[in-house]
Amino acid sequence: MRKFAFLFIVMIVSATGFSQNISDNAIGLRVGDSDGFGTEVSYQRALGENNRLELDLGWRTGDNYDAFRLTGLYQWVFNLDGNFNWYVGAGGGVGSISVDNVPAGTDDSETYFYAAGDIGIEYDFDIPLLLSLDFRPEFGFGGDLVDDDVDFDIALGIRYQF
Image (cartoon, rainbow, N blue to C red; front, side, top):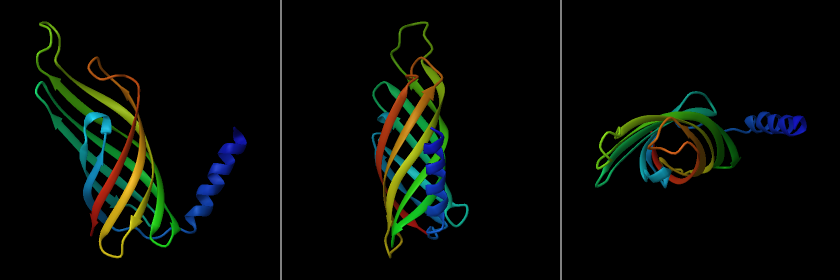
């Protein structure tokens, strides 16, 4: 296990030397399953030469429920080749769900929390367009209406950079 951790740290440090500058801001959509949330509004803010903060807001309404969630991730971005990058990150979020038509005497709303990881690839076009594909495992906890388990989210992102 120590050898794996050492190798991972060496890879991160060596890749940092080949990182490229990222745009100061990017806003767009992250389209995936998101544990039933579908499309999320996504904002990225550069915090340094090769790291950034990503905030995603998802909401969903149906016949008998309303829900929203806010995710925050800290990401490290590394250059692969030209405009092609990969990134890794960690963070978490908070969500709320309200369900109608539940049995009498049962609380029909709750707030929950989750921790999240993130790994993905992206292509930074010469125009202010950024396309990405990422994998985000989420570890939820906090209620009866939301499962306390691991969800795996895969999504395609399209963002305008400014």
